[in-house]
Amino acid sequence: MIKTFYPDDYVSSVYSIDFDALYSQGYRGIIFDIDNTLVPHGAPATPQARQLFRRLLHTGFKTLVLSNNKEPRVKSFAQAVKATAYIHKANKPAKAGYKKAMKLMGTNTENTLFVGDQLFTDIWGAKRTGIKSILVEPVQKWHEEPQIILKRLPEAVVLYFYSRSHPNPPLPH
Image 1 (cartoon, rainbow, N blue to C red):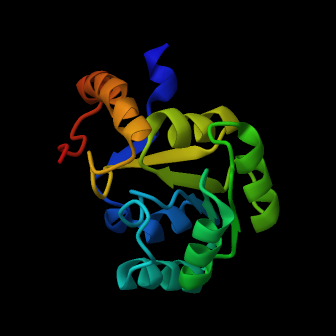
Image 2 (tube, rainbow, N blue to C red; image 1 turned 90 degrees about the horizontal axis):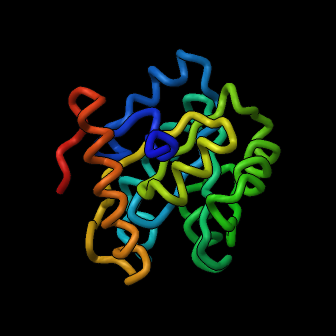
């Protein structure tokens, strides 16, 4: 049961992912969470985030930001990084947002991956939809909205068991 929440991969930062290797493995679409995945919660797009999306688009990836946040936040971030598309109020972990994301990018479950920082919304939604999931350490752990901090406690339990069955998971901040 707990394995339901295990990511397919777990890395310290979105900026440490080998996207070229993923492209060579056939992945063509990447769905990203925004807050605490790419930037601190509520922060605007950073030069590092804009550079990442430029590189991904140049490589040939379609990119989409999928967030439970409101449209002004999601739209402004997506425009700043020049993402292929965005979906706001996605209601993650519901499958509908992930499916819509693939439709907008013209991808499918075999060639799409998801990158996010929360197990019970981001990763579980991707897994339920059949998309490869990559969990990243939060950009700013414990500096989040209260409801997210409360989710981090049971996430720590899941990650403890995950680390026992997966060699070399990233060290928590």
